[in-house]
Each structure stands twice: as C-alpha cells, then as structure tokens.
Image 1 (cartoon, helix red, strand yellow):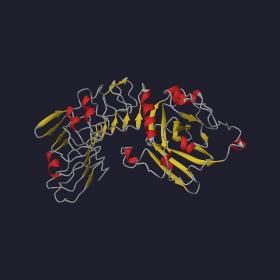
Image 2: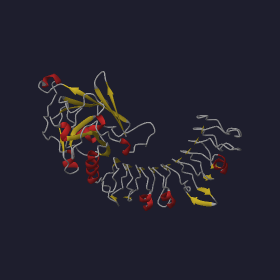
Image 3: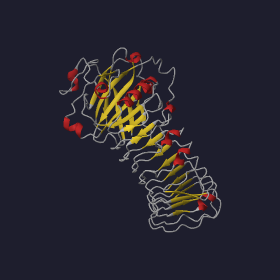
Image 4: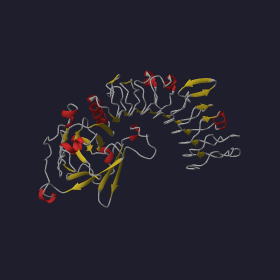
Length: 437
C-alpha cells in the first residue's frame, strides 16, 4: 500500500491473523492508524514511514503483541505513542519532531517515549533533541546494539551510555553542538562523530585498552591521533578490518590514480596487510570499488607510459602515520600517473583510511606466499590512492590454517551492505574490494 498519496483512511482490520508485514509508507494524507479490532499475533513489521498520523492508539500494542519492527520515521505530525510494545526490537523515530509524550502503564515521559526493554535498534536522528530531552531510562536498554542520534541539538549525552553492555554502534554525526563524548562501553565497534564541529574532548579513552572491538570510526575535527594508532595496531595484530573516515589534511604522502606495489621477498612473513588511503571529492559517500591486479615486473618501466614514475620498495616517500598520527611501523611503496595538487586536496573534505588483512584474501588463488610479482591498485571512480604494507607485529602463520572469524567485526549497520566485500574475477584474475561507508 506504499505511495498512496490520496489515502486518508484505512478500513478496520478484523480478520488478518496471519499478516506478517504491513507497510503504508508515503501515505501522507493518512492521519489515523488502521483500526485494529482483533489479534494480529503474526504481525512483526509495521511501517508507517512519512505518513500524517498523529497518534498511535493503544490498540496497536494490545493486538500486535509480537511486533518486532516499528518504523515511524518522518511522521512529523506524530504527537503521541500510547500502549505497550514489550517485544519491540527496532524503533525508528527519525525526524519525529512533533512527538510530545508516550503513555505506558499510566506514566508519561516528555518528548521521548519509555522504550521497550528488548530494543536492539533505536533511531532518534533529526528529532531536534536538546539537552535533557533524552530520558535516563535509555541507559536501561540492556539489549540495545544500535543507537542513532545524528543531527540533534544536544551538547552532552547521558553519562549512563557507558552502561549499555551490548552497544555496538553509536552515531553522533553532525551533532553540531556536541562538545564532549561520554565514556563509551567496551563493546563499541562503530563510532560515527564526523561533522561534530564543537566537539573538543572525549571524556574516556577511546584507545584499545578499553574499546577493544572498535574497528570503524568517523572522526571529528580535533581527532585524537592515538585512536587511529591503537586501532591500526590492534586490528593488524588480530587480523581484522579497519575503516576510518577522518577530516582531510594537506597530504604528506604521494596519492596517485594507479599504485603498483613491488612486493618484497618476505612480504608474507614480514607484513600483515594493506593500509589503503583514499582521497576524492566524494570519498565519504557510497561504495568505492578498488581493483587489485597482477602486474608486470618493473624491469621495463617504459611500458607504463611517459608519465610513469617508479618508487622502489623501501623508499620512504610517505611518512603518513609518522607525520600525521605519530610513529607506526608501515612502509609505503608505489608508482602512478600523477601527483595530487594543492588545489585537488583542498577540494576533498574527508579521507578514508582502511586496513585489509592478508588473511581476508586467502581465497584468492594467486595470492599466496610464493607470489613475488608486482600488484596494482586502482579506484574505479578515479579517486587517488596511497597504499602501504603494514609490518606484522606477530607471525600470522598459514592463511588457510587458522581461518579468521570476521564475526568479531560487528558490521550490521546496513542490512544488505558490509563495509568490505572482497570478490575474485577468475577471468581477469583481479581482486575487487567494495569499500562502503
């Protein structure tokens, strides 16, 4: 029933016991929830996105006792939610700026509801929430994994956020008034804080001594350099991915459209993975496809064209992490077609930095310890790359002997997209890395 722009009323629901999903999205003239007059125990998903509904009556919670996902995003006329939703796991209240109160068991909580205790996903983005608008009982949601608070008006968060034992993702992007990060739970895996222009300090230490699962971060302007360093070191040791979005700075590295690595003889035993840095006007949007190919030897550089430039392995053209973040044991090698001009880098707002462990490539037939040829990296959107080999802090062992459990990298922000997806084209022998943000 989605997109029925003229629909004003929905007929009473009487005999629909087996209905599992009800979607009335974009029915902007619809002002009342369908009158539910009998049990709908099979209903698990109710989607009222961008409707004109003003009140959620108690009958919804009374008859839809097994409701799991409730989407009320962009219901800007919504004033009140009444009833009980004990089993609800996902609640989306994005841009519900008119929400006034929530009645549950006779109690009233101003601005935001008392939340069902089994919630795993709570979206309160774009709700114009100021200081004091987030109720303290949000810290009692022991099953909460994803909390989206982006684009709100508060300057501080409740300190009890650190008491959420299962929180995996906290999104604070573009909370312009936020001046301080609270202590974060040790379970945190993804932290988004880009666009927080007023943010100056983090009350807690985001280093791995506490946030040992942290692998995906977007940083604010005054980013703590230790965060990136500890993330890279810990993820490299544990053979896990890393993805960081950080504000752009004037490059101290060579960024080229094509990077070719001349692998050293000890690449397998001496290094643990690739450190990829991506710069482009839109590098913080969507998915980027990076293609890795086998290349010829560098004995005949003229075959690469007139603009080819060789950088032999071990020549330190880039002190990327040394200059920008402090010392880290990595080595940069590459060759490409063009250098990034000052004008180019100033047009880039963000830079992506990602770590791809060798173990994630173990299914590639030619990517094994015996391979000694060159490999090239290129972003299909023509953004510019810098590639480094990260030295191994401990011996990895056989890539196939101890498969890595990538479930340790919690990556359930989006249902269908993972941050890194690696595929192999047998015809071209090329590796494709889909890198999403």
